[in-house]
Image 1 (tube, rainbow, N blue to C red):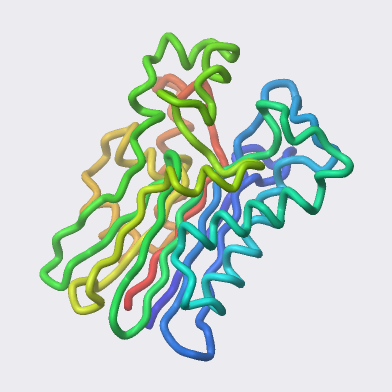
Image 2 (cartoon, helix red, strand yellow; image 1 turned 120 degrees about the vertical axis):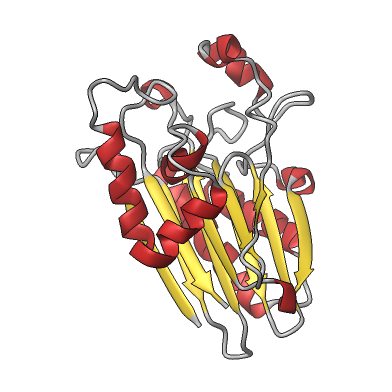
Length: 257
């Protein structure tokens, strides 16, 4: 088994709001967890702790439960992890605030029989078959929101964790039921990768290659290599900033099973 991961802040003067972890439980198999904390406008979150604290707390609990509770499906693990994280600051923070700390989520878990996955919001999961074919598992609800809506903070917030909009892991455990989940027989998966949108933009924003090409870069150059490629493209002054951000926190994890 080979696991390679990397994470780089978009701005060295601000904390990285991504979370990446990999675990190999004593019982065998493995777990990957990738979160992309949602950066609030003007620091408005109604929370004294902030997004990095939230991502670390939620990511840590997701990693622990995914590895230790094989009897729990991933959507239930996400619900429990959200509930416990919310309980940790319910008495001090306004969890009803629309911008309460929140994150996108990818969880992958495998054993000798199956590879299970969960994707919530716009981080990306890639599954590679033994023959080399690559399947992207996406939650595309945010992509369906018109660009003119996303240009407005108020209009975007009206669709955040709301019917007809898009969903992130925040303070409501019920959002776990909105995640894209599934499982694939272990023999049908050779490698997996998970990327926050700061890293996946190599494909979905800059069009430097398709998802199979992206996975090939991860295999050959590692997660750091993919992120270096993204930063080089972003630094080209001829390119407009992606989603109004020249550089975003970028994280990737690649595992050959």
